[in-house]
Length: 125
Image (tube, rainbow, N blue to C red):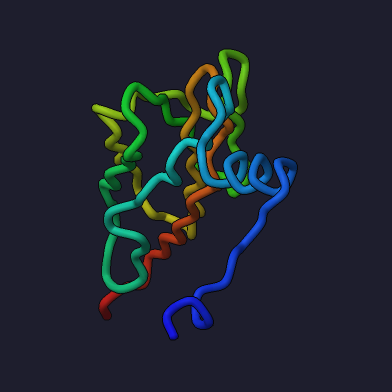
């Protein structure tokens, strides 16, 4: 009775190799830096200035940010202000709305996705 329930499964070598390639990261394969987090993620009520902590979970990464809405880029000649992830605090005044955009990058890794925070001064009066 047990013999009739068991079935033999045959996988070709090519199919098995494809399964392994998908499930095991390859040596030297580039991975992406973790997207930065912004704390606070936005501000819109009764603030005149704000300090935003920018962080990434990627150890040893650098951050670049912009406050004019332009997109920062990674690398040694990237666009935006560079800061080390370990000291990622940015303070700025809000006389007009500002959009903070941040990216994380590290040599040998793909740049992170862009984090975006909108900071708007609205008078409490």
